[in-house]
Length: 166
Image 1 (cartoon, rainbow, N blue to C red):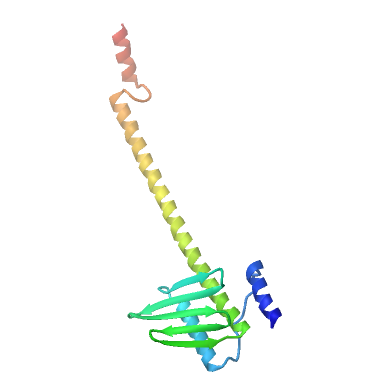
Image 2 (image 1 turned 135 degrees about the vertical axis):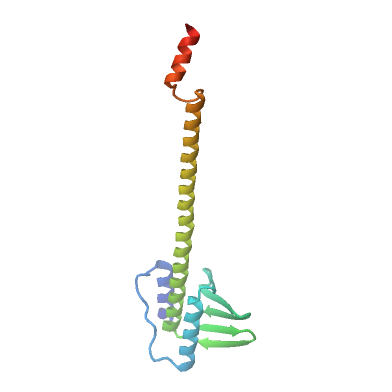
């Protein structure tokens, strides 16, 4: 038992993240139902996902028509709290690993989406800034040619300068 736990912590800390963990087969009905609820809640777009890196625990909250559902994936068990009623489902190591991996993938997907949106806004903002600067540069360039006081002298400026000296 110790080596199985050690394997989990070793994988979590030293990151063999390229290994795909498969969903366990032939589960008892209550564990199968709990895992289906877990995956549905974490994949809901309006659910809130929290992770505690110190204790390696995963938390999920989903509110449907003012009825919150709270899920806590702790060491060896999955707690499901539906408004007032709470359920404790004891999980084997493979089931817990699968739930944790699903949670991490969903958090990573949301993080990537958040980063893409944020960087898209920055690029859009930079494009707008560049357009505004080009527009301002064009108006300064047109204004300077019209006034003759800023920028490269035009032929009219040169004529006025010659007539003042001569």
